[in-house]
Figure 1 (cartoon, rainbow over the protein chains, first blue to last red):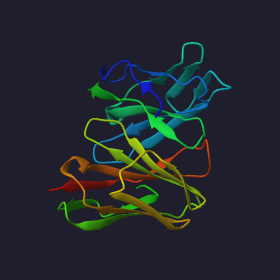
Figure 2 (cartoon, each protein chain N blue to C red):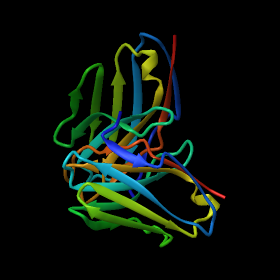
Figure 3 (cartoon, each protein chain N blue to C red):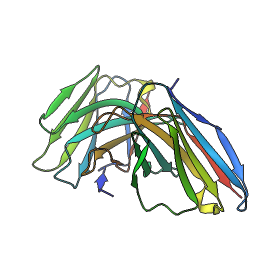
Figure 4 (tube, each protein chain N blue to C red):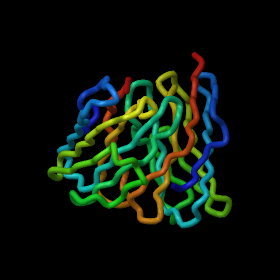
Length: 112
Length: 112
């Protein structure tokens, strides 16, 4: 499979602060990327996606940045809340577009 | 609640048993996926079905046998599993290539 990895396995932030989760990918041909949130006992939940023709996309309290030059993806969460505590995965499509490979994950803990 | 339903939620089976995992979605998605997730690890792609045909098999051992009876259902037949096959098995679906995957909450499988 493809190689998708995260820089930090764990992250702790104070409630109300902003969080930044990073991800590196290896396949320069990948053209679609997704961030997922996985809470304990549940399947991954879609947060936001971005295609390779964009470098930034914003959602509600979340922003994804894509730097194709260095093959780096980041997820920014504004005003982090206790409900944001979860494991966050980046995923990229493989060469055919219907294979999604996941990075190693970052566990986010929000401190009240 | 997820729109992808997986049954059973939990399954304990012996190494000589035959069992099946089931997945159902009614969103009209034409791509369906099986992933395997070990504790504290990212989901690993196993199989992809596109328009009810197997399009990707990520070199999965033959003791795992997928089946897609129709566009809404996906099964994973299990036979002669090993204890190391114990994991969370996730089903996902998507509209087409390069579209977000919607995950179920998984079947927690324990092989004794």
